[in-house]
Length: 103
Image (cartoon, rainbow, N blue to C red; front, side):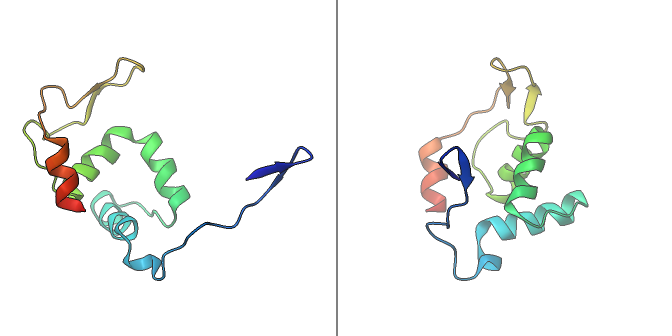
């Protein structure tokens, strides 16, 4: 949204997929819905779930994208105290390897 005279004005999306049901996000939501017995239907639903169930979200990301690395099993976040949260303590992964596999 942008502001005109202090009033929010909705913006049109810059881009939308031709077939939203065939996107990685849509496939991810279907997998999560099935595995977690929840009902994510939109980006907003996914975002809300990802910030309310942070560890579960990242565990699903690791599984869905078959992230390569060591120590990625189990709970994604050990202690949720920002800014010193401990994500996958002891895990090791090669960022470039994971990114290049997806691209």
